[in-house]
Image 1 (cartoon, rainbow, N blue to C red):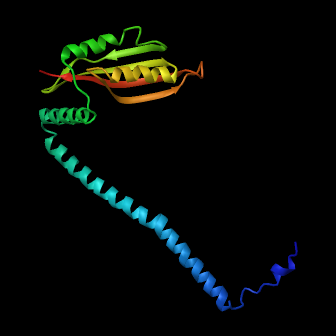
Image 2: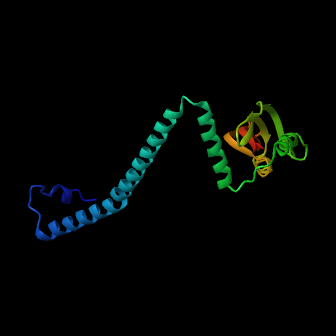
Image 3: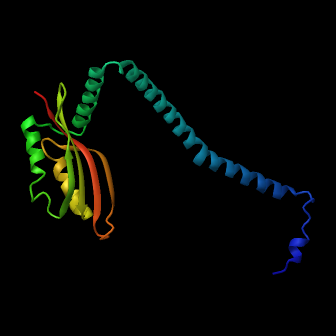
Length: 190
């Protein structure tokens, strides 16, 4: 490569009209692309984030007003859970169906390929419209079989609503995963 050509460039030399015009057009194209791909989408995202912040602040102030009344908080929580379940078109069963769902957890056909490491239940919580029983489970098995197990639990008449979920590879066998699930069974309170 001939380096003499690069050394002979004089940076103090004034650019001719053609070079100035090309530089100007390239700068305009760059600015147009920048505004179109970066500036406008970020402004839209910032505007929607500001709206969400305002709505969350309103909800926070409403909850602070109600913080002195535990019955009102429970009513709001039940209403949120109930509307979420209805939004997913899940039909809630009765208290007996909730008990049947909990008893069916120990059914061996449900655990085909899944090992139950530990399970904990809370006491039955009764609200005005809903009955809830919390559950914590630790499972071990293949990813696909754990997925089938969870699908079965979520499709019952008193479904398991998963509230917290974590999964990691098993240290012994890489084809196995360890899963921790925290959730609640819900039913109608008549």
